[in-house]
Image (cartoon, rainbow, N blue to C red; front, side, top):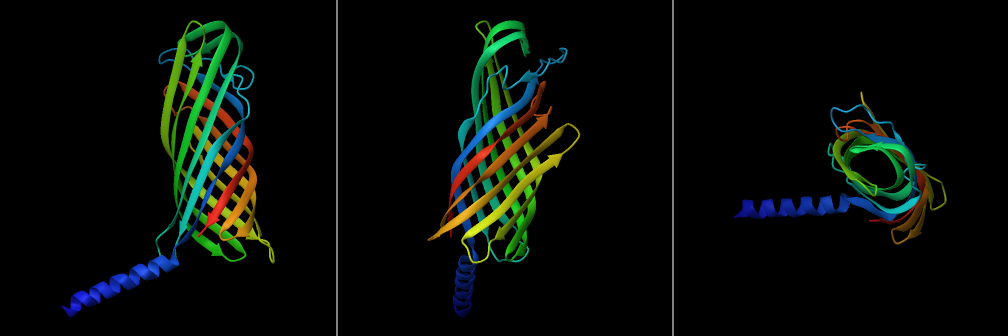
Amino acid sequence: MHWKKSIIVVLLGLTNLYAKTVEGEILLGIFSHAPSGNASYTLPGKTMNAAVDLENTFGWKQENDVAAEAYLEHSLPFFPNTKIGYTNLSHTGQGNATDFFWGNIISFDGFVASNLDLELYDITPYYKILDNTLEADLGITLRYIDGNIAVNTFLQNETTDFESLVPMLYGKAKVAIPNTDISIQCEADAISADRTTFYDYEISVRYAFGLGLGLEGGYKAFHLNSDELADGLKTNIDFEGPYTMLTWSF
């Protein structure tokens, strides 16, 4: 029976050690994003439609959506740390179009209403390569993209669904300003392949209040240029703007 007690003691010791070496942070806030760029949707076997301007034709303007992130770090060798993230990008607009093409909507003149519902889910294993006044992380982000674009006229409706799982390189650098509770950081993901270029970045300043709480604010941008999200759908879209998040470190 002594060996059973020994195993229990070892397991309890490892659990206690692991609990003491785990730390992390949770962030929740608002991303105020303005769209720019264009998109087109062509039914299979048809001649490629001209790209539609998101601001001038669809009438998409700046919107506020929820963004959330969480980091979990530990001191165990070889095992990566983990970041998870969620971003919602939604837009609704309307405008008057001339000779408008989108899917089965062909050469339409008149009022066009549209909306975008786009969700980005990230999981990022990463390693901390520097951990002093200057912190630096490197890893790989797996991003699941799920969304749709709905276009409506008084004659026809067309909804284009799309989804994709995209691997991206991840990097982060953070500098703590000595003798203050302020830090500056830059964080980015990126991939470029034959018919796809995705990237995002954020530049921010954080102030720590105490009790693990803080406030982070800065500028965030997403770029989606691809014709592989769905058959016939081509996107060259940017979402950019300021963001603010409440942070809790533990």
